[in-house]
Length: 447
Image 1: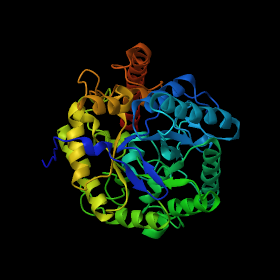
Image 2: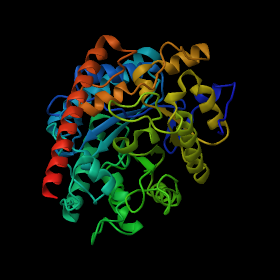
Image 3: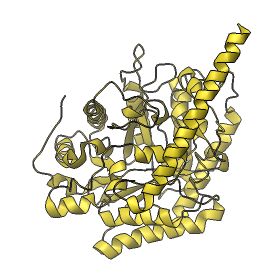
Image 4: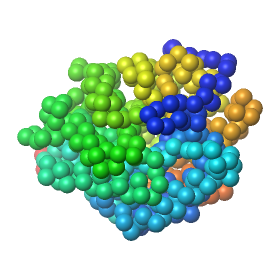
């Protein structure tokens, strides 16, 4: 495997320039859902604690977690939701995050704060039960979720109206003090599914490439017209790892082989629309999570993937490098580094030095070790007793809807939540087995 390495990590602390803004360093805290908002979508004390810790950790950019634009768009009953009724609590979240950084580093430590706006689509569970809103039939995901292939698809008129919901949410984000918004287009959620919607019949939002990118490009244009001072970007899945016609960024013959021609064409359009940076992601976690998050231990009930996690890291590095090569002046946020533990900085530094990435994003690592940037700056290396161990406990907590954090490195708060998540996962697994056995008996009687 090709794995770049540099003994000098100082490049990670160099500034990054984008139109109208200079980023403090190369580090980005990536969006990781906390599932700890109140029923109305207000950030809780746990939410505030998490982002204050990120702010004190030293990274120059904090990419806030997926925040719903509508009630039916929530992935769980405790997902953040920005709306007029929650505006004051989001304003407090932004203020407290910036104050935490200023107290630690001084008032010239100007963070870039981006809020990720989302519609969960087929993974929506606003009341804790599946309430999927589907953009196209997908036999791979439909079968795993127990959905009928004939299920009602979201209508074009509904998608037209949803563009305005995203624009309204972006306006609220600007009012409460965020520097920018991310129109989330990754991991199989609604906009991501639209990018792959070749199988969506007779629709302005499906079939050909121009239709499939329509929602993302038109929504971006609306937000930029209404709020010209707001950074508009996306975290974009450039490789879904699901065969055509259901996956985006995949080879026509082999769904496990990337084809970046369409993602590169789309990013070019987004840059022309004014995107000053782009976040890259891979895979659909609910389907085959190792493509996006190389790990050592799988979720409860899942098999360990055949490939070594380092192969997944190498894939991340390679695909990010292809995107960065296609857009050398665009700050591209790479990810997939958490599995490398204390060895990620020299590999990330080499990627930046060789023009294979501009910014280095970490999600699970931020939950486990929010002070990684400070420690690296002070010591030149990371503490192996504090790094993420890719144990999937945080992913398990999110999957079951319990508050998300690091059960190992932040155990006083999150170890009990993980135990609860583990019990819930075992109950769900038992119920799934009973349902499968019942269906098998019915099928046998019918035949």
